[in-house]
Amino acid sequence: MRNRISCSAQELNQLDADMIQSVVGGTVFEEGQQYFSTQRVKILDADQTQITSEVNGVYGVYTQTIKLRAGTLSTRCSCPSTEQPFCRHCVAVLLHQFHNGSPLKPSANDKDPAPSSDLRGQAGAPHAEESPGAGDLNFWEAILFIDWVQKAVGLLGKEATLPPVPDSLGGVAREWVGVVERLNSQCLEGEEDRMDALRSLQSAESMVESLTKKLECLKEEAEVAKQNCRVLEIKVQQLQDSLAEISKTSN
Figure (tube, rainbow, N blue to C red):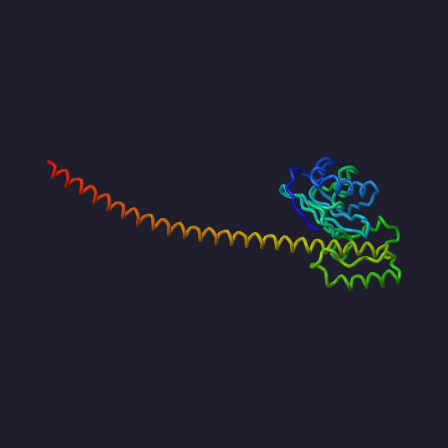
C-alpha cells in the first residue's frame, strides 16, 4: 500500500504524535501506538527525509519506506491494509522515530558506498552485528529460503506483497527475506513513480485536447458573431440612409 499526502514538516523527526493522530485518526493511531509501545518496530536505515523499516505485524513482518520530499510525505508498506492516508505500521515507525530519537544520518548521499562485492553492505542489508551467528545458515533454513525465493521471483517488481514467510524461517535467512522485500518495494516505487508521471502526461494531453476543441468552438462562435455584426452594420447604414431621405423630404 502506498500513499502520498501534503506535509508542512521539513524533516521526519519533526512529525510528533499529535500531528500524526490528526492525520490518520484515532483508531489507526491507537493501533500504531500499540505496535510502537510493544517494540515491534525495527529501523533499518534512516536520514532526515527517508526511513526504511520493518514492523512485526499480526500476520508477519511488513516492510515500510517513508519519504518526505518537497512538502510531500510518501509512505509505502508491504501490508495489505487499506487504511488511509497511511497504515498503522507506518504510524508505529513515525512514532518510534520521534520518541526514540534514533540518530538520523545527515543525508543518504553522505554515506560511504559499500563494496559492490558485498551485498550485505548495501542499503537495507542485514546488520551482522545485530544477530550473533547471523552468518550461520543451516540446511533446513536454506531449503525454506530457496523455496520462498523461487515463489517470490515471479512477483518481484509486480506485487507489493510477496509470498508469506514460513514462521520457522529465522536467523540470516529471515534477514535476507527482508532484503528481497525491500528491493521489491524499491522496484515498485520506481515503477509507480513512472506510472504517476505517465498518468500526469496523459492527463495533460487530454486537457490540451479539450482546450483545443473549446478554442475551435470559440473561433467558430467568433466568426458567426462577426458575420452578424456585418449584417447589423448594413441594416444600420440602411436606416441612416432612410432617415436622411426622410429629412430631405420634410425640408
